[in-house]
Length: 197
Image (cartoon, rainbow, N blue to C red):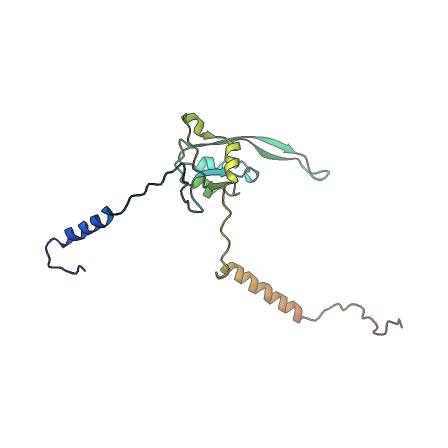
């Protein structure tokens, strides 16, 4: 509620007060290339690829609304681990590229990846003079992977998830029952004097 509700032009006076207050302050412009901006720890910059986790399931490429992820692979036969076993086949990643001229940074590819192969990197300086150079191959995506910050540590003061609490309670109950139950097959008792009779 305004202090002078009946005063005509009180809204104009408030607006002019803000103008006068900011008019006297010196404006500061951050000189970007010389001064790096302070980014939040989990900033959405570019997408990093952890190639070892990628199973070439193609889920990220299928779910991408911009169709900017390009994946090529081939099948490779792995010999049986045991004699008489069957040979296995597995997908091998040949090409993984993201066209950042098309990407809208929605993060769907990162969320649908079931194997944690894609992560947000805070890197944002990847401007190019040619639009065709904005398609980054897996080598560049792998370089960005090492700039991904570690996930935040668990809060020690947070309460335990219900699933873990229930599992722990069941395990404690089973351990208590096993400790209370007498041993059905007692082993040979040792002679306290160490003599055989």
